[in-house]
Amino acid sequence: MLTPWGDLALSDAHVHFFSRRFFAAMGGQCGKSPEQIASTLGWTLPPEDPAELARAWAAELDAQGLSRAVLIASVPGDEASVEAAVRSFPGRFFGYFMVNAAEDGAPERTALAIRCGLHAPCLFPAMHRYSVQDPRAEAVIAAVEAAGGRVVFVHCGVLTVGIRKRLGLPSPFDMRFSNPLDLHAVAMRHPGLKFVLPHFGAGFLREALMLADICPNVLLDTSSSNSWMRYEGLDLKAVFRRVLDVAGPGRILFGTDSSFFPRGWNYEVYEAQTRAMLDLGISGSDARMILEGNLSTLFAAPQDSL
Image 1 (tube, rainbow, N blue to C red):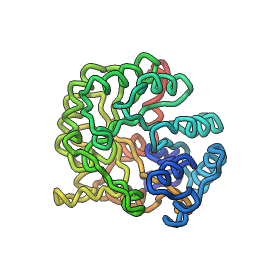
Image 2 (cartoon, rainbow, N blue to C red):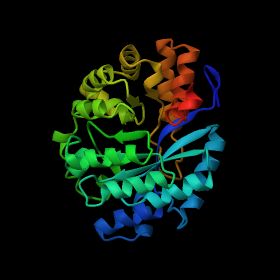
Image 3 (cartoon, rainbow, N blue to C red):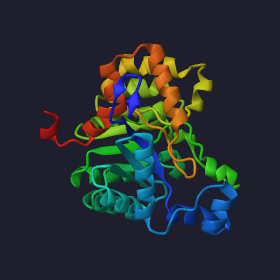
Image 4 (cartoon, rainbow, N blue to C red):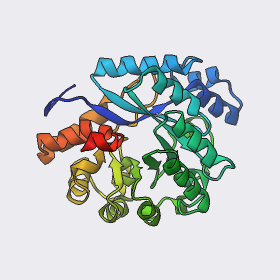
């Protein structure tokens, strides 16, 4: 993709893979069919076969000039959807999957998904109402390590799910479990794993930076509109400056939080973030790491990163 820093193999570290199973799960909570959910939202209903949805995302990335993307299965139990996507386009997609660590069998499901080719579980402690320090979360993280996984995604900070609001569904989340500092002891216990925090910590920027400063295995992704900035009177330029000062360019993952069709890839997020980086005067080498290299490095085999 042609960027302000030249032609880069742009990689997006945060794309939600809203499969037919996701639509069915949302519909099951409000008594609607997947077709009715799509109609209510004004979104394109995905095909039954997740490989077809993967093809749609691959075509979208081609049209926008992107090289790679992380696809996130966005309801627990939807590992098979992203497995199909990764299997259909090896090397193009990284597969993440949501895990509720409070559910029975979560460590076993996690280990199986990693062994089947997926790349990282996504933990949402506030959504599922447990602490990331809970032994159940520790069991999931240990399962990742034992299965040969390298990455764990942990959502901290403010958690809003727009689709739930539009469908009139409650969001009984518990922000007591949202502080990035809760991850400190966990990340220190697992130095061989990388922990990714999306949305710059989603309102806990100070805490996320403290964590990243102490734990070199913590990375931040830049995804979403980052509307949490209004809590601190910040703009994206200031956010990038602070993160670069503490974590450096090698631990920032560019992402958009793209999710549905017909919108497809969210170019507006890319545009806003690159504008902020330009205003900050970021170098070409730093931009290349953030926009292209860090995601690939995250999953590179040890010998590949020498």
